[in-house]
Length: 340
Image (cartoon, rainbow, N blue to C red):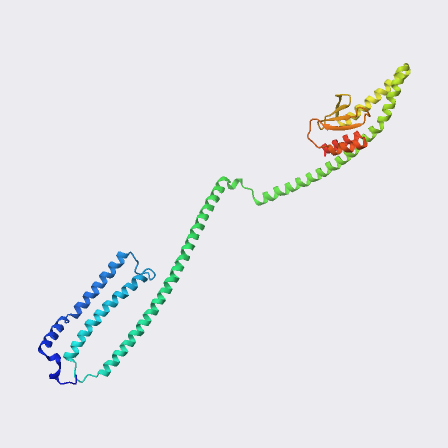
C-alpha cells in the first residue's frame, strides 16, 4: 500500500477488467448465502427422512453429526474462500492507504481466539449432551421395566378381584359364619375332644382290667387241667366197676363239661376240631380266627402252631411256647395281640 500508485500491477488495464468482473460476480453475496442455506435445509431434511433417523435424538444421530460436520466444514471453506476474495477486492478498491494493519491483525487474532473458545464450549456441550443421552437411555430402560412390572401387578390385582367376586358369589353373606359363631363351634369341638380323651382313658383302664382278669382265668383253667385229667381217670375206673361210681363219674363229667363251656364263653372259643392224630384246630369267634396246634407223635408235646385264616407273624410266641411246652401262654399272647 505504501508503493506508488503507478507501480501497482493491479492498475494494469487487463488486471483492472478482471478485477471488475470478479467484483460483479461477487456482488450478489446475500443471494448466494440464502441459496446455500436453503440447499442445506433441504439436504438436511431429506437426509433425515432417507436414513429414517430421529434427528432429535443425540445418540441416534451421532454418526450423522460427524457427516454433517464434514459437510459444513466444506461449506465453511467455500464461504471463507468467497469472503476472502470479496474482502480482498474491497480492500484493494476502497481501503485507505493509512489503514492500521496492526489493529486489523489484533482484531483477527481476537476473533480467532473467540472462535476457538466457542469450539471448546461447543465440544463440551456435545459431551454433556452425550452424557445426558446415556442417562436418558438408562432412565428409559428403567421406566420400561417399571411399566412392565406395574402391568403385571395390575393383572394380578384384576385376577384377585375376580377371584374375590367369585367367592362372594359362591358364599353369600347370609351363609357365612361370624367370628362369634366360629369361636362357639371351636369351643364345642374342644369339649368334644376332651370328652373323647376321657372316654379313651376309661376304655384303656377297662382293657387293662379285662386283660388281667383273662390272665387270671387262664391260669385257673391251667390249674384245673391236672385235676380234670385225674377225675377223668377216676371216672373211667368207676365206669368199669359200675354202680354208684358211674353216677359220680357222670356228675364229675357234667361238672367238667360245664367248666369247659365256661372256658369257651370266657375266651370266645367256638369249636375244637381234631383234624389228625397230632393236630388240633381251635376256632375262636371274637375276634374270628382259627389256631392250628401241632403235637409230637411220640412225646405228645407241643411242637408248633399257625394261624389258618389270618396273616399275622406269631413265630416268636410259638418258639417261646415250644421251649416252655406251654400252649395256654401261646393262646394268651395271640388273644392279647388281636385285642390290643
